[in-house]
Image: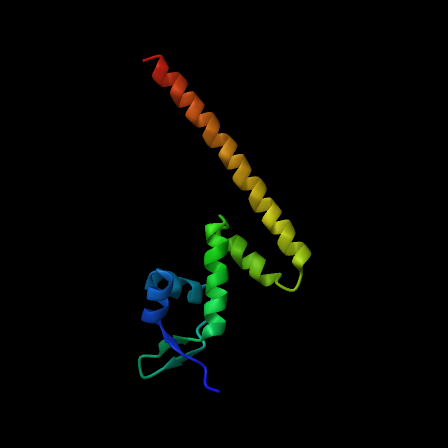
Length: 114
């Protein structure tokens, strides 16, 4: 059974990401293409790589930084470590939210005194 192969253009269109993003993920080792073809060494992807990309996109949407995603992926065989990392991200996001709320309150206070 042959694997369906996707080009960079197809992957970018399917996931609404830029070529630059996809190439960056390759350069940092987060998402390597399945193969390269032709004299230009065009990057090709299969469903396996797309599943990894979907996970990366989901983690980005959850607020994880690239370095946090790399750590998360590296401990894929240790769910406890993954959970610990996600809890740290959750705490960071909650602290950010508190800080933004304080900043908004300070701005409202400043505006009321103008």
